[in-house]
Length: 125
Ligand SMILES: Nc1ncnc2c1ncn2[C@@H]1O[C@H](COP(=O)(O)OP(=O)(O)OP(=O)(O)O)[C@@H](O)[C@H]1O
Ligand SMILES: [Mg+2]
Image (cartoon, rainbow, N blue to C red; front, side, top):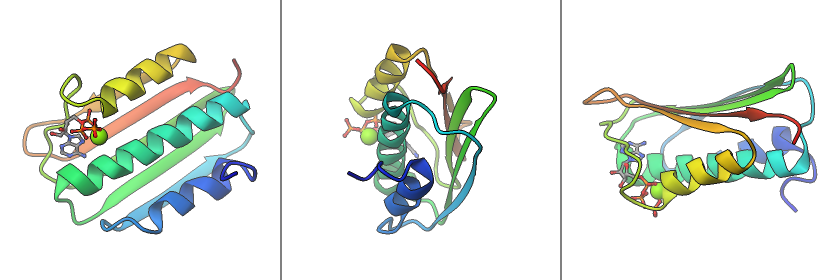
């Protein structure tokens, strides 16, 4: 499956077909638990889908770090902004899924953009 080689192999694959070009930055110093990797991968897929569907952005950036027992995923875009929880099932689903593994979802969305969404969670359950 896509995560056999870890997030370092899987995350760039998610951006290949994106219609908004995505710059990927990764600093993965440790391999998180499988359930954590799956949650991060799920978040990345939804956030990139949202960028393509809603942002109208020219470019986006995905950053993933794993160090000191914490994993952080950030997806930002230079689009129109306006991301909000509680409208669709996507972001709400991410917040719930992250909460189940002691994680949090932060939505930073100044009016008019840009949008930056961060998922942060412990590397080990
Ligand atoms: N990157 C983004 N740029 C601009 N608006 C966004 C972005 N991401 C989300 N939004 C806005 O936030 C709303 C909620 O996103 P969410 O993913 O929860 O729902 P959705 O994408 O509309 O539907 P679903 O994910 O259930 O298919 C979206 O409808 C959209 O208006
Ligand atoms: Mg969505």
